[in-house]
Image 1 (cartoon, rainbow, N blue to C red):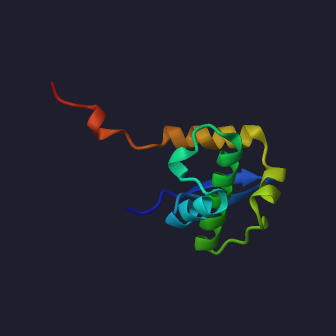
Image 2: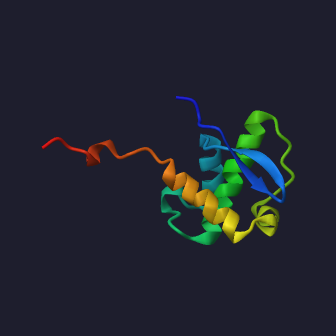
Length: 102
């Protein structure tokens, strides 16, 4: 299955935004944590979003002006981060094990 391509806007510019294995690896390298441990931590979420967008840009050949998560966070608003997180939850695949026939 191909990655579902979305976009994310920051500082008035749109960038590709979709999950890649490279984004997961980059997050773990930067934080020492697994993406499954993020929860609702604002700092971890912003670093993860940085990884997702930067790796999608790299894959698509799009110039990405942020060299590190701090530079990215300087332009990132809390509303943008929360909207992105809500989009991720809304598009998460259903847990097929949760629907069992009676």
